[in-house]
Length: 320
Ligand code: 5GP
Ligand code: MN
Image (tube, rainbow, N blue to C red; front, side):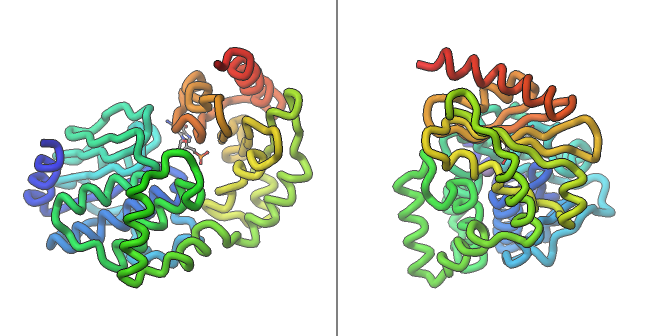
């Protein structure tokens, strides 16, 4: 059984790197921190490797132990979390050099790039998969571990509101609440609190937001210059794509963000019901989930907008 194999590899390893996808969100960070605490509880001394740590998640237990890079070149074991493919993995060199590799993820587009792969595309968050794994390992999910896991679940479910939330999500949350985990504080920090830079970016994306395709699509953008002007740091753009989806009648929200002042944009998409944005992003070499996905497209704002809108238009025409 896969989980026994994972446990076996953990037991054997002396050095362990814990990694997640680049530009990490709350689920990626929650997963790295939770897995690392679990490994510590198993007597290991893992390295939490995240090259750019978003400031809004610094409140999470173990965040102070995160390192941007490591001196160890060849880990006994590398664990990739919440990451669908090697290309998107932050710290991929540690993964590629490791003697053994494990992938734990919930993306339907996962390429199974580890020696051992534990992928459940119906799980609403990678952190929810970890609950099952830790329970199988008979670990006590206590305060710190619970806090990290919940931060991931709350982020990826938009605060328990997206499709994919399971009865187990609530049962697990209730159990943590009983154990004294401060659910409302985590919710507040992970979802309701904006950095000042994020707020300034929000003002810009709102003023630029176009409503297209008979009110079914929103489009907006930020440039590298915007980010510079508002002193944005890693992760400060997080959540901006959600704004468009909340508009009545909108089925697809598109948000693009310039990368490194180049003619290159990171596309983030969200959908409400019928449109599978993962399929659309897959056409451009990206992926994700049916209702939340991303990809990278070269070009000017207008060119990128045109490319993506064409596919969104097709998807709206051809949906069931
Ligand atoms: P976000 O829009 O929040 O950056 O990403 C939404 C979802 O799509 C996340 O689950 C994220 O992991 C995934 N995603 C974003 N960009 C890419 C990409 O370029 N490739 C793949 N495979 N997945 C992506
Ligand atoms: Mn996730």
